[in-house]
Length: 239
Ligand code: C5P
Image 1 (cartoon, protein in one colour):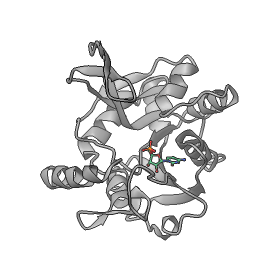
Image 2 (image 1 turned 45 degrees about the vertical axis):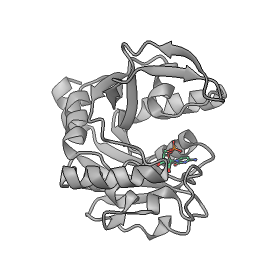
Image 3 (image 1 turned 135 degrees about the vertical axis):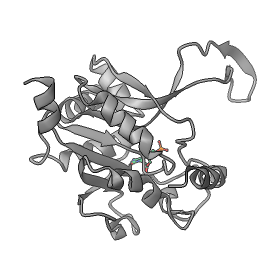
């Protein structure tokens, strides 16, 4: 298959893991359902995916006992599949990929985006897809580290200064070939390895994962203070 045929025939699917409990926030509901600039964090995370015409459908992965997750209604006519999450983020993504079985082809692209990242700029999503759509396996949005990094003890004593040269923060979306990502996640699970993003599973499986520089303000809402910061970022993005 030529690169042009590949570009024409493959489809893009979004998988949004939203099955976390938000245990680092003192809120009664999971962080993805907290209000942010008039809608929920989850709506903000989904909006750029819904607005991207190349994405054929979205898999939303929610906790089985989630009282809020099943209420989500798509904003567009894209197909929406609701899947159930697992114990770890990688289990939730694996379940999301299983929900695409029979629907997605091996070479199709899966775009995994955290439900807890409400500040994704549409241009970053477009740039990720444009940069990677001819890549053999895929890659992720990332931002270079500019601060000096310290490794510390649990008590906060500095143990060492870590060289920041060549270090990047891994963001989402992360975009990989459906078949390769499914197999890489299954392999890391079978090996008992913990991975906190899809890229790590692909790296362990021996694939050359590509970084695509994204905006540093594509933050993950982890602590209560992040919500306030996310509001400012959204107001500045104007989307
Ligand atoms: O916990 P963390 O901040 O890394 O979560 C990142 C994303 O993964 C969140 O959107 C969260 O809802 C999701 N997640 C999940 N299943 C889990 C744990 C986290 O879908 N078991």
